Image (cartoon, rainbow, N blue to C red; front, side, top):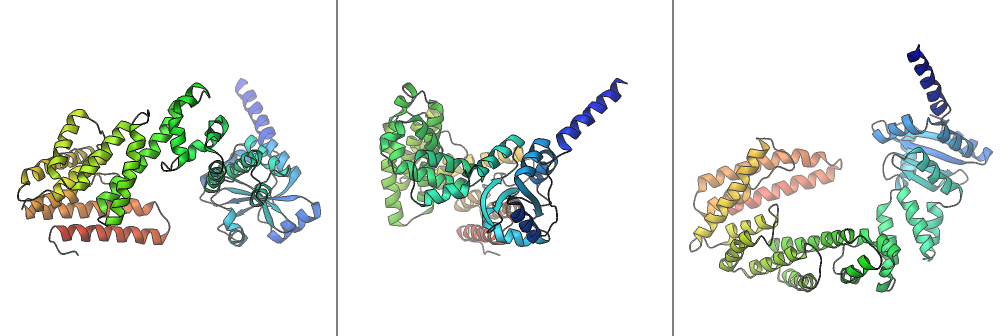
Length: 441
């Protein structure tokens, strides 16, 4: 009896919550939707979905059937929904493609001229969806804010409202441009305003910009006077500086162009001055990486070997994933094969051990993240005169690269991107074979 009562209560609740949901003109011709909206003098709410989209199904099952959502949508809009890959939805997608960054996208359309006045992108909880659409009805639409912004208005209130609408529309690229433009047009000391600092912080990624150095030098002030979480600011500073240092190291490893190398040296000197004068956790390690890379750029193999040996003890750099292996690869490839053979052997043994450990962890499985240093091992053994092992490892590198290609290409639908991935693979194999005296296939 109790179980029956529970079921009755549950069914009653479900009917109340979901039984009076959104009334969509499902499958109705677009011309009829427009006519109905014009006659009733209401905006159109269009759910743009696809059959394969999980979040779209989530909206259809959990959000649109709810009574409060239905009450709001039914009383304010003429509601329609179209599969963007079927029937009339295909033409509507072509028409509004620039306003549909992904699925689901919900558009608010003015039936008078079929223009987009507001949009909500992605799975959105009922209350958040109602609030976002109410903003649209109140005139707080993306279109209105964009028009004011394009007309030259730059009040803080507009910037905040515009960015809120861009969040709902899932347009993070425009949001970044708006915030950057606003903050970078203001005096540097405006970043002593906590609200402006927190607004700009996610985009503090250009270490050469004056705003970056200003924030770095005022860390103590932010912590003591503005009660800003120092860890959050330091993390952003460190992430941006790490990227800048990595760019210098990677560029100088791959380039021999004199102008490019000169530019990288100049940037390195700029960064070293900033790193040495800042009290930011992690900056000492980045400074050490630049110092080591400076020695490598000079081509002094013996000095670089001594520094790398000291680094093992001092642990000034701890990046076993990229930085150290890059230095080891350099030693294997550029140490003199006649007078510095022992150095080649030493770093080759280190790379061999690293690869063996990775192979043991992967247990023979190869995916996008599986270690594949067999190219540098092939080069190393070739330089030591072991051509048989060099060829064996070159083939292993080729085999693993092919297996990783499956995962790499699976991430993209664009055939041009897939073709580019294939071309990069072909180029990498040709370069390796040329270095060890093999004919490419």
